[in-house]
Image (tube, rainbow, N blue to C red; front, top):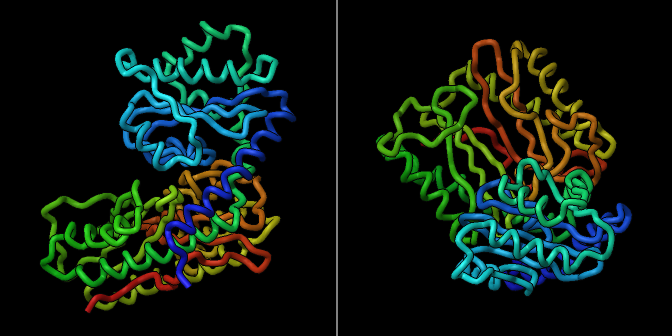
Length: 392
């Protein structure tokens, strides 16, 4: 039986206090009275702030304040319009906007957030932050140092990632639902794509499937030249009979969870050379996902993939993207085969798996889907088991 949006929203409301309580436990252990997180509108730029509040953003910056002893976070935004949007979408009712007559920049909102943080501070002079060098603006840091010269900034990024990389039952349900929507989007692309049809007609049809279900940030892009980079094609480009279209869809769902999926489309049967390469990817992905078990070093999946390609006659000379990474409200929210290779996989992590090997002829496919880590190996989060489709 399908789950209604109201039931899904109730699941989010029930899951959020667990997240906040887990953070507050870390804060108490570290002697931190309050945490202040900033978010900037854009993919991968406000996932942590969203994790604790379901913050929504379309432009500009916002701030989330969480006290170690206060169950309700505060959201501060300089835009009264976006504050109103958050009153509709956020899981907290504490939403502030500076006086619109003086809120001429995000620094005004930052000062408002900092004032709330100082009010909530449960003693001490330690402020919890995340990736402060990447998420705070220069003016914000100047204001903080002016007003709080004796405070210590404590980076909670790793502690937060350790919490959010393990997906709750609610999150697993949302991700698998998004996997179904992404598969339907791929099927819609297949239904519209034909030689002579503008490519954007097919990609917009695919995105219509997602938008109709509340998906927000995201895009469709593709490779038409057997090379690794996937990009939006020119608006006037039409499909050609001999095209090989590696379509990638990256989208976030109604509550911000990201999904990455690709498929290779053609209008003619694949040549023996291309079919052999696709079969190699299928084998390598099966090896990688079988290794997606608790206790596996995430970095070990990269040489596993590279060696498997070499065994099949494809000399690997480089990497165009991490072979796999944890994914959630950010496109990377934990273990990453490239940046944190020593991280151990844990049950109920969700990984974007896409062998990132580049071959000596410069070719590479971004063959991507998402898998839940289980004791029996990776569990695919969609029903799309195929890597390529011939459109007839």
